[in-house]
Image (cartoon, rainbow, N blue to C red):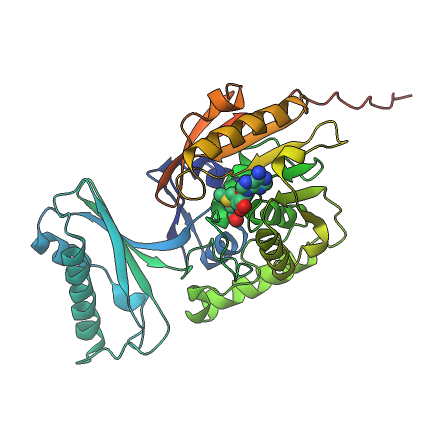
Length: 383
Ligand SMILES: C[S@@+](CC[C@H](N)C(=O)[O-])C[C@H]1O[C@@H](n2cnc3c(N)ncnc32)[C@H](O)[C@@H]1O
């Protein structure tokens, strides 16, 4: 069966998600307001959930309509054939977002949508109650400029929950954002990667999983697998294919350092849970002691911001010292995400490109400073 699929990603990350979809063979799509919509099958749903590293969730779109009153909202939802998708035993949590719309009261929209779904299901299935004891069929609504899109959440929990991060570090990055930072950098598994402020190790772990070709969702559950054979069997097949393609013998050069012993312990525990313990060198080290023999390395990092972890003056001096360390590695590339507004001045260099991104609710900037390109290896002459 064909479905309209909607993949969501965080503000600023859409370009990375679009590239990932293209690598899955889903081309010609447009990213708008954090959503990418395209046609596919249950196998497409499985592949997107399993492989996408930068996306938030994968949805099946059930209907789209305009509404400026609660009556129109009720009518629009009630017209959707939920009985074709949702069994009578399903548990049906309703969540969503509303922005720039006449119907801006979230709780009212949520309860009207829920009522309309239940009325429709009970009438069409000829039952008087819905027990809501079965598999989860989460309904999400996206209201934007009075257009309402009603979707089924196939992922369940957000895709940043890979399953390997069990302990909580200080101000950790979401795994999906860490993967996007890597995608926006010049790093690839052939290049040295260093995170000198690694905290619980998210950037290094995501990089190691890319290097080993371990799919993002290999170790977690998804809601759609409880939706019957049509959805569960393509995931099993895709997982088998993916497992055969994992490169356990990859030898990437990935290093993570942090000044706190406790953070290094966390990072090591997470790397072990992520199956990449032997692919990353984690060590307690002050960023100021960073040095390397590698000529063309890449730093991708998320230093303390000053808001949450340290006082402003400390961050100013830390960022100045970070800039001095960068000067000792003039052929390296530096990619830094921070909400610290004076970063470029303290670091002592202008970014070639800046991207607005959000770390949780905190507006940040991703300062991209690629270094010089390594010389091309001479090709063997054709004789
Ligand atoms: C924002 S957190 C990084 C979080 C990390 N991206 C994660 O996902 O867990 C910044 C980290 O910088 C570390 N740090 C602070 N000063 C440092 C220094 N001088 N050298 C190395 N690490 C430092 C802190 O201990 C903290 O773990």
